[in-house]
Image (tube, rainbow, N blue to C red; front, side):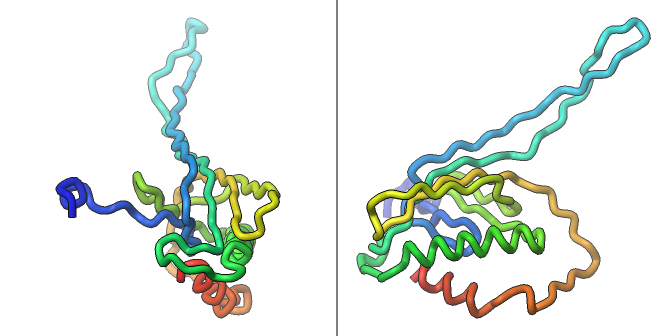
Length: 165
């Protein structure tokens, strides 16, 4: 084990919610803010505060049937990853459920998809896709009840096991 690994820790496994990805091809973390403008009596705008905008992450990922960490081939692993990605998007839209994004740099605990782009190519053994995610602020209520008929837990676990094995 190298000294840098002891000091800084090992590289994190990149994941989007339950979906572990093989390759993080590119990642852009956007942190912006804006100033407030208020007109005063003389007609001049003053800017005396800044609003911190939610962080955005744009990234390109690849998942293949060849599991890089275990050096094994899993049939339809890329297809299962695509199905899990669609399921996470549906959970976001129907239940407002955020997901966590783990990059090599940091963990973003509450994210929502802004866009998912899955270009088609000739390879059936790999899935490359672009995602834009936005950080959200979650206000936790005193009690949350999610009807179990809205979540097919067995399907989520089945898809997640195909991708993360």
